[in-house]
Amino acid sequence: MNRKNIFLIIISILIFVILAAAGFWFFVFNKEAIGQPIAILENSENQSTESSQEETSQTHKMVTDDFSVDLPAEWVQTQATSENLAIIAKSGEDIENTQAKEINFTSYIAISKDTFSGSNLSEYMQTVKDAMAQSISGVSFSRENSFVINGKDAYAMDAQMSQRGVNFKVLLVAIRGNENDIWFLSFNTTENKWDEYVGDFSSIAQSFIVKI
Image 1 (cartoon, one colour):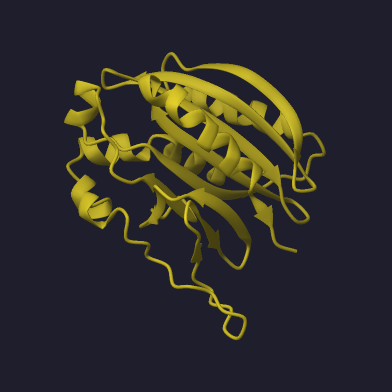
Image 2 (cartoon, rainbow, N blue to C red):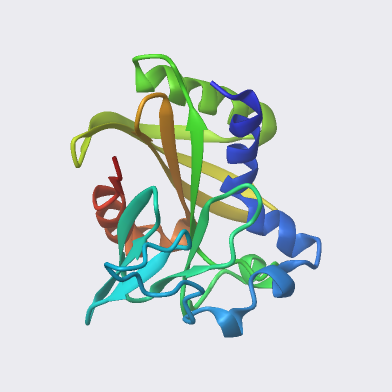
């Protein structure tokens, strides 16, 4: 397990809260850019190293050299940070929480990659829990379970925390990749938006395919 990557994963869970508080939000995550995918369409003759998004009426497929994932139409890829391979944001989100508005928070999904040589994903996720507990005051966890996503072992859990006066809920999903790779997905939103988005979060996680 790469402890540096674990640290970066923890940062990624609420990176946009940190950036917004630092006045960096508009530069990294311009709301006018949301809805405009930064990727180009993939074709059979040119497998670009950049990610691509294949559109349908209600969903679009984000495709990279390493993975693909199906996204509802209103969830779109935006500029990633150095800690993540991809950031996917909720387009046109109506944030009702006053404190969340003040820090310009928008619900988002972060996709990261780590390495883990152990056989038990619950052990990996325990390390994530321990790191979060050390870094985020008052964080709690619930609904832990293991399952399979498209032939790959996976482990998921929910996390709840309060930052800058806002109650957040996060779905954390670790998916076994090729060899010792771990794909880590964090689905980040406010507590009052959780029930609205949890179905999308589950569908997106279940669509994640690791390329061989």
